[in-house]
Amino acid sequence: DGGITQSPKYLFRKEGQNVTLSCEQNLNHDAMYWYRQDPGQGLRLIYYSQIVNDFQKGDIAEGYSVSREKKESFPLTVTSAQKNPTAFYLCASSRTGEYQPQHFGDGTRLSIL
Amino acid sequence: EDQVTQSPEALRLQEGESSSLNCSYTVSGLRGLFWYRQDPGKGPEFLFTLYSAGEEKEKERLKATLTKKESFLHITAPKPEDSATYLCAVEGSSNTGKLIFGQGTTLQVKP
View 1 (cartoon, rainbow over the protein chains, first blue to last red):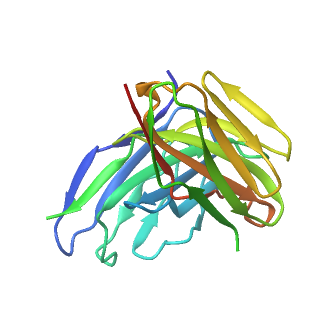
View 2: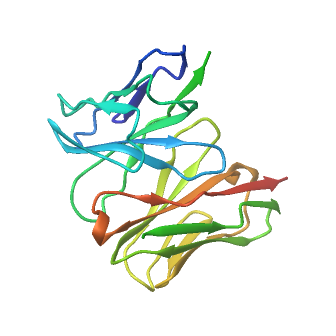
View 3: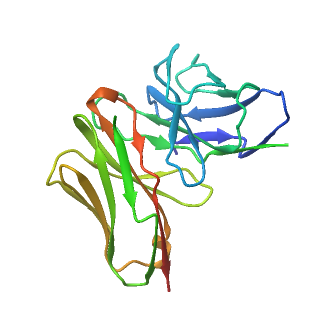
């Protein structure tokens, strides 16, 4: 079955440590996205990529970095510069073009040790 | 600035008690309004896309409608398995490919 796989499901970060969240899709979608979800708030866009080897900052990119070397993969690194990283992180993908819905993985919950 | 507001924040219904969830939006040039369902600890599951005022879409006990300023998600005779958080998002012409999400409405249906 086609879908989006995020790993790990739970992740713990120590102070000063960078951590990388994995996102893989086999839907043959060109576009991929990373969101952060905090309690009581809507999803906020961190980074997005419409094509391989290109990506753009979203609304809350500070303290995060991404790469898009393959169509199927869009890993997110939470750097030590992100002072409040505890959140639920969601990866999504979609076809490019008008009216295309985004489809989501089941998320990674990041906590601070 | 594009903005989405959902109400109520939380809704409790008895099984079989129909109701509606509201999604009010401000966007320059609506390209699409999307409804999602999210279960605890899971990613959002796509339900509907609405493109223009007057449009309606249905799926089982859910019906989504769209006007120029808001969308409603009508739930007819809900069952406990309809309990979830329902998210609304819009894509505007000034932010192609980017969705702006509301905070969601958490629905609890009691047997």
